Image 1 (cartoon, rainbow, N blue to C red):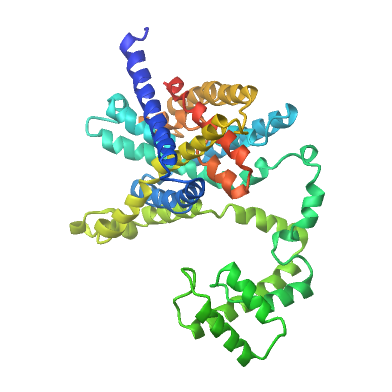
Image 2: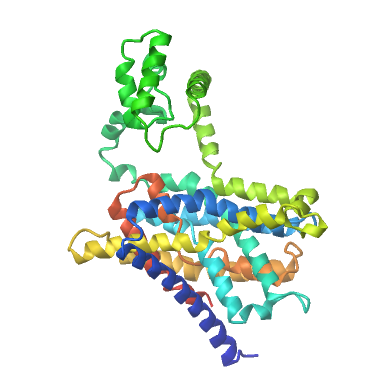
Length: 461
C-alpha cells in the first residue's frame, strides 16, 4: 500500500523546520560575535562550560528521571548499539582518512555524530509539528512523555559517544606520522611523559620543593620562585610568602587564611611527591593502560553514572524526582536548579559554532586564511552519515523490534535507535579542537563544515 502525500510532506516539513531552528541558533552565535557580545576566547570558555557542567547536569536529570529499576533494561540495547556503531564509524574514518590523505579532523567528524544538541532540538521541533503523536505507545501516552523518553535514550547514547570523543578524539585529531615531520623535534622541546617537570627525578624534586603556593597566579609564582632560590629557612620563607601575598593581590588570590593556604600547599606538594614515586614504579605499559582508561573518566560519563545511580536507587529517585508531598524533598529546589543549567547545553553548544563561523567569515572578508573545507571530505562524510548509516540502522532496528524480543515495546525507542547513528558531525568537535589545542585555521574549518552539515538533517525524514 503506497504512502499518501501527507505522510511524506508532513515529516519532511517537520524535519525542515527543525533544521531551520538549528541554523537560526547558529546565526544567533554569529550575531553575538558580530556585535562583540562573545569573543573567540569567551566562546571557548562557554564551550568548556557546556561540556564540563551543563551536559553532566542534563545527563543527571534526564537519565535519572527516566531510569527506574523496572525500565533500566530498555537502555541496555542503546548502550550496546552505541558502542557498536561508534567503533565501526571510527574504523571507517581512520581507514579512509589514511588511505585518501584527508585532513585529520575528518576522522572524528565521521566517527562522532551529533548525539545531543541536534537530536534534542529535532525532537522538540518534531513534537511541535505533531509528528511524534503517531508513534506514541498508547492512548495514555503523551507527547511530553515521549519527548522525555527520547531525550533519555539520546543522552544515554551520548554518554558512549562523548566518552569515546574525549578519550580517543584527541588522538584522531593529531596529524599522521608522515604528515608531521617535526614531531621528534617537538617532543624534544616538550616535557616527556606528559608531566610539566620532565623525567629527571632530581630536577623534579627540586622543582616541586621550590614550587610556590598554587593559589597564586603564574606571575606571582615566578616572583616567589626568584625569592626562594637561596632555599632560606622555613621562617624566613614564610615571611617572603607573607610579603608576596600582601603585595601581589588580585582576583585569583586565595581568600583563605594564610596558615591554611600554606598547610594546604604543603599537603599538595607531599601528596604529589608520593604519587609521583608510585607512578614511576609502574612499568611503561601499565602507565599507558592507566592513562588510556583515565581518559574515559570525563564529566559527561560522571554525570551519566550519577543519574543512573539516582534512577536505579528507589529512595534517591523518590527524593530527587517525586512530588514534595510524595517524598521528593529535593525536587523543587536541587533537582530543578540542576535541570535549569542542563537545559542550557543544547543551544549554547550550537551558539559556540556560530561564534567560530563568524570568525571564519570575517577572515574570508579580509582575504585571510579562514579554513578550507575540502569538498571530497564533505561528500564522503555526508554519504556515510546520511545514506550509509540510515540504510543500516533502520532495517536493523526494525528486525530487532519485530523479529526478536531484545527491544522494549516502545516505538519511541525504535525511532530513537534509527536516528542515533545518523545526522551531522557532533557540535562538540569545536570543544574537542579547543581541548586538543588545534590551530585557529583548523577550528574555523571545523566550524564551517559543521554549519554546512546542518543543512542536511531534513534528509533524515
